[in-house]
Image: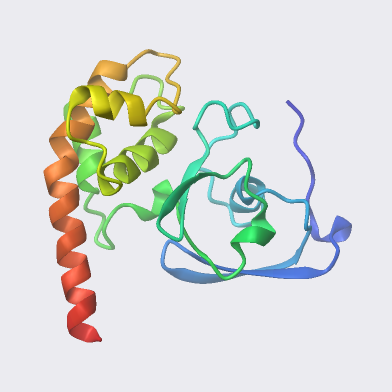
Length: 182
């Protein structure tokens, strides 16, 4: 797999504005051909999202864009301009407390080598938020776009099921606190 150099020297001069993990970020001179994955990893230094297949087949690059899970290797960075991106690096609380899904993955040993874990976590949270964590079969179906070469699928399914109530509660609390500020 080759790495494409989307450095400023090769760019078209476009500036990309994103909110990444709650922080406003500007990517100067962003090549219009750059994927969101390449910008996150190469320009912003956020290497949690992995370049597994670079074809949208493995899910290792999954991030949230404006609250939806996307395969960042298939998403042009330019299409995310002005958007809000959450990567695995942005899941923990500001004080370092892990996200409930991260805690559940740890408790259920839902990772082996760890390569797929960032994408699995991002998809697992989206799975719950999308309302697809009602049963083990439903979780497996809605997580099927994320591959785990170590075959930790049963542990991942258990982690999603375990964390689902905490993720829902946390999201409801955050929505409530945002409503109070408005």
